[in-house]
Amino acid sequence: MGSVCVEVAVNDDPRLLTALASLAAQSRRPDRVLIAAAPSTPETLLTESTRRFPTLRIDAARYPGGVVAARSASLAKVTEDVTAFLDTDEVAPSEWLARLLKPIEAGTAAFSGGPTRPLRPPATSIERYYVALEEAIYRDLVPSHIAYLPLQNTAWLTRELKHLGFDRRIPFAEDHDLETRALHEGLRGEFVPEAWVYHDKTDETSFLRWARKRYRYLTAMAMSLTKNGELGDRLRERRTPVRHPLRYVEAALKPIALIDARLRWRRLARVRVPA
Image 1: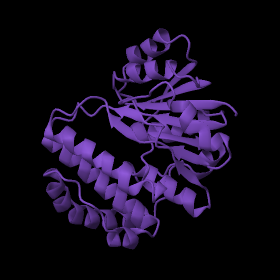
Image 2: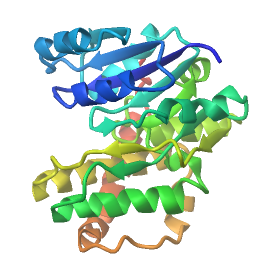
Image 3: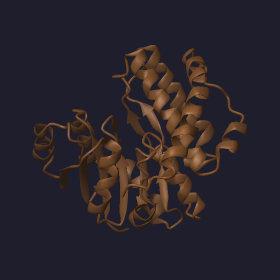
Image 4: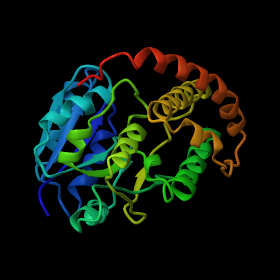
């Protein structure tokens, strides 16, 4: 197996230190950890990250824009053979990276990914909804259609990742767009159920903030589906609904998000894809 870089994009989130602690405890230690920081991230947090974990080779750099822009711009700094992604709100068990890399090591996949588990039992209605939603994604969607795999627990052959790049016109669904384009080019992705990470959603306490985030995601997903010619297939899919009252709110948001997405993409399709 070649060298591995784990990238962690951060936007002023102190949970970065917890994520790094889990990387320091990996049985398969990454060759380098690249912290792609948005401008609002305090310098003290980046300094503490490199000071606290001397056993990790950590490179931290700032990039303009938000997390998606930082992740996209930082690709130029990756020189390792494989690039893995972990978010600041995730904690990886010690065998996570070794398990995640197995399909790529075996040469059976160009990218791989695993599921999430709640960091602790959900205490609020919003947390319970996120837990139910993520369980449904990894149970019902990802095994049959790998393009639904969230980016934050994936690994990629770096050469393929750089070739595809991120389309920054579609933030919040750039992972779906990336994976869809990978599949269109004949690359194989593999779901690795045992390569799970803990996901901390305990900071989600505001209904309005949740609704705004879900609307942004629904709009971005519809844009990705429209761009990649898969909107019709998505609309024809039959799914088992998440058993939670918030699904009715999300169902009401979807038609509005779809119209918004079609209008946005019609305008953005004429714009050059950002590097």
